[in-house]
Length: 391
Ligand SMILES: Cc1cc2nc3c(=O)[nH]c(=O)nc-3n(C[C@H](O)[C@H](O)[C@H](O)COP(=O)(O)OP(=O)(O)OC[C@H]3O[C@@H](n4cnc5c(N)ncnc54)[C@H](O)[C@@H]3O)c2cc1C
Image 1: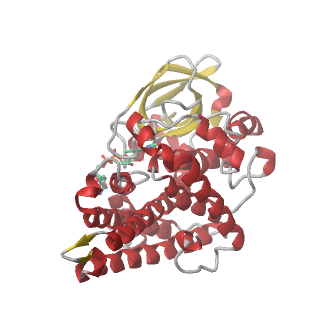
Image 2 (image 1 turned 30 degrees about the vertical axis):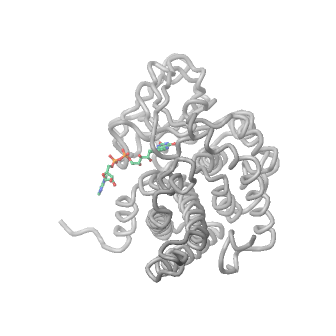
Image 3 (image 1 turned 90 degrees about the horizontal axis):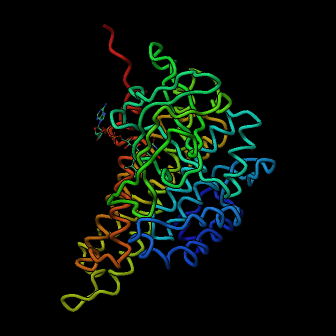
């Protein structure tokens, strides 16, 4: 059982983490995995999953009890992300990661007491669903190019613009939205808003995708959308910096999600290679296949150890931007490569919709795009290595 959490022991993984991991895995296998085919086909899992997560203590992991949190460390978040892969659906891990690692941290860190009570506490209790709205049709990797505009009206903010690819967007009760408040001020002219989805002027539509199919992805529209003054999160003009801070947790969660999925793909291939016989012997007895499996195990293990190490640095007060990007880049690439090889080892069986291996393959493809693409991670890393040229 511990093997599924980590093949090799790691000094930061304690018995408490292992115990938590066992609980997550058991839940994922018993209550989620049996519904995978149905929920993927419907492109939706039931919203009641959020309250079930809250009941089990899987929401608000890193926040104090007074905010309905679990008071646990970041390593628990990594273990949760990895072990949820046993659901066989990346979409559920992503939906929960968005709440735990993307929406909740900025509210906890920058929010007023009133905002924490109104948004963070009900979200941690599974009573409200949250989403994060940064990306726009014309501003993906280039976050600074966002055009959604917020202006002060009579007693409220008025938002106009559009967001795209927003996870949990169709069912969210509120969206944490990045908007431009002073266009002339560039990076210092953006702010964060807690937009309730019953606000006048807010509409949305579902997007259909080939990856993370059971997760809900939406396009959001703000058309003179009015929200109260008190829904500004943090300082006016600081939204870009608040979001850049938040991205670090998001990238780390993305790395852990990718490794969890890669591990599932690898274990499926390892099993199948020992069952399937061709030319009178098991696939696992052909050197070409044995070496593939050896490479997959090596790449996963080395990357997993690095992801844990970076999580430990972050947990212990460091702000390892370069290392987080390295972990996200490596984990995404490794999990895509491993899933691709796992599918190849399955032959035609791997392409059947009834086989979870095809899901690991198309779910993990998102890792190289969401939360900052591979190219953007490389830019972040390169910036720390290569000083700017003098002009
Ligand atoms: C399923 C899904 C869920 C998502 N969930 C959310 C969410 O909840 N909230 C949210 O705000 N966003 C979300 N996103 C958006 C995601 O973060 C963006 O898709 C991602 O940041 C990339 O932006 P883009 O798709 O606009 O690609 P683009 O930025 O247009 O990039 C296209 C290509 O150009 C490359 N490129 C861009 N700039 C450079 C450069 N400087 N150097 C080299 N190459 C470059 C990219 O790496 C990429 O390969 C989600 C996306 C998906 C698909």
